[in-house]
Length: 468
Image (cartoon, rainbow, N blue to C red; front, side, top):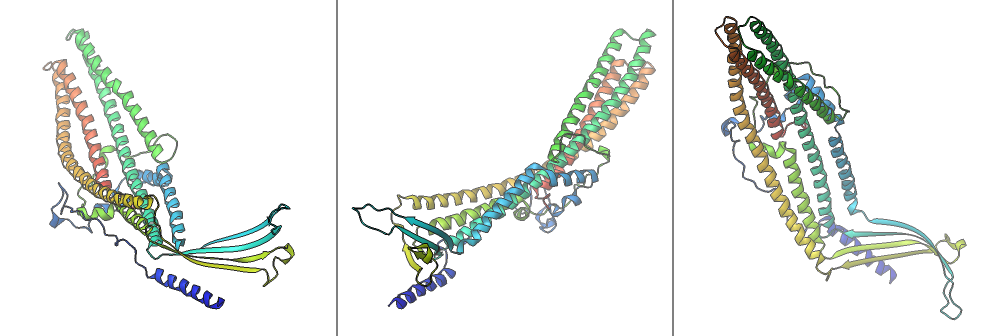
């Protein structure tokens, strides 16, 4: 009879095992949210000229940025940046969760050793005074409704989401280092322009001073030129302060203490390559790490919903315990007399849990809908960022062309004003105005040039470049 009972139990276990292997989850399979994307970016090439496999974002940052000094800075930041290192640690944490989830199909195993001593009362029930037990117990739940499978899918999606989030940190880091470096070169250029104009203002001041001595101009002319010179001189320590702050910011991005940043290239010698192919908006689904992270969040939420729904259904569990049990420690390992075993199969159907299981399932559905909305928002935001960068790029190129012409015009005006003033055909005010206008035009051109370079770096990031 006992053998027949054991046979039935083992048959039940085999049935559960085979059933769990072929079981289907209680929720439908995941399907990527459908988002209607435009054929091309606003301000970009038409759809016929854009190709998904021809995309600026596919270029590694070492190929995209031509300046060797900038590439070296980015290399340092990618290795040492603290925020990026924290993001990498998040991957390690997610990896541990994934490793744990992969073991969900295996039975739980516990080993225990215990010694029980009892001192019964003289008038009470007499029981054994001591008992020695060494046992091992295992429990296994059949994944009939896909609960464990859903848990594994959620862990995998969370891990992949963390990976993509780390890539997003890296793309932002690359763009920030490039933008900071371009800003630093602009400040160097503005400092050089201010110093040259200060020297020119000194020359003009001496010239007006000679004319004042000769009685050709009044003291007011000397004072106004001196004030103009002082205004230029005042801007120099301001620019020097900005240079130091920008160097410190770049040093922090590179994970090192604040200090100087080496650069050996003139700002206006940098070549801006702004005719690279953009690809098509649908490529953002593969290139943008933040979009991919949002999509993996939807996958994780869908899997969590499957687990929450499976909790509403019966759970099938098999428990087994075996070991040694003896009243005397000397007989503990005497076999087979001290051996014992226990095997149990059970079905547990939740009936009334104060609405907790139902509430968790409904919450999981809402979270799944939230994650899908967040995914769609991230994609819309990505297309917006690319479109904005394209508009900015188009307009900044037009501004730069006009600014270059303006600088050339005003530089000629300064030279003409100086010659006319020396010959008495122009006033000192005309000289001062020409010099001031030329200085502001050169400073403005440097800033527009910096914007041009920074917009290209931002366009590269918004397309999903920088993590390769």
